[in-house]
Image (cartoon, rainbow, N blue to C red; front, side, top):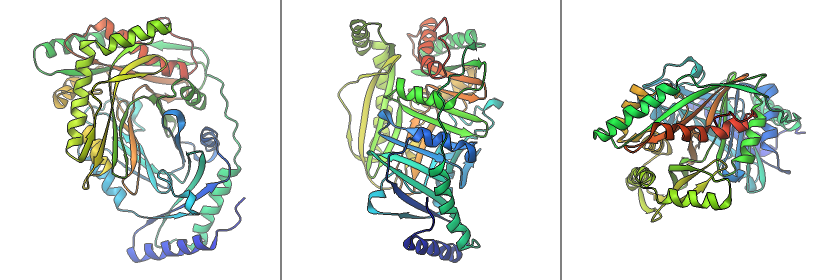
Length: 473
């Protein structure tokens, strides 16, 4: 239990109050503590349900080497703007003066302190479905309390918006009370699945017709590629267990980014293998992930399928389009770029992809969110050329993507952060879930083959939610 604040932090708190008064604007004060034992982030996430339900996030990188979990919301930065939504988030975040107090030198790590977590819709010009009403075009929040597990150590961050008229005693109680509340909370994480389900594929024929229209347009020279997604609705016998789903995703999809964003009664969760952008200091990382094939039932079959993918002209063309677009974007802001000569295979439980990592050394003048805006959507999620592909998606795709395939992730006050592409995902509301999957369509695409590919891509979420496999999947 924490009974009092250390003297140095009390002085830091007084300084923050003075600064807020001088600026006549609120400032953010963050206290970072190194915890003496490794905390289980999923347990922490579940324990936050009692006091912070409706405003939580969970983020784990591949292999769970870096996990952050946020509870509550000290402030929200959001907008429903159709244009400049990335810039507006950045401008609002820069407005706050941030003061971070690290309890000791060991607690100074990227991913602790004041940071925003959230995401963007795929396309603000194409929003029509009430199911995404909780999720505006962009929404980020500064958590009240956050756990970061990194390099076999745990760090607790407590944030507070310090306003000019705040009282010292009230602010001090915020830090001690929140620390005690979350560290003492015990919430057993139930792994009970939701049980049997029914699955509805209402727009399947419309989607396959859209594939035919897309291939005709591509053959006519209007564009090179378009990505078409579809949605299935799943109903369970009781409320879906988000904790069990996250745990299963971590077990079954260890090479993916695992995420959950809870807004109100709804949770958008997924296990995406695709990083959009990571910035750490001047180092930039992105992932080209396009072209896929199923996993084999035996090691020999799996190898044969992977070899076939590495030599498949259709998939190589699709992959090269993505590599070129991301490489060109890096050339605008990087002094050095490293790209492998050809793709390799990235294998998940259900599917294997063509994969090319791209790394760059960034020169000054570009923010993380400006890079997110530049890259989104990559040809792997939208198509190429971008404008024509987006126009076609709006015209023929039978769904509102909402945040599906949009950028989700985090950024801190020093322009560090990471965003992934929110695929292999689902929107959960009680006993209902909407799951999404898409395919890259080129001139040689066959509607039935593309449909079968979407079935493979739905498997991770269906498995995570605990239902028996659908007979077609």
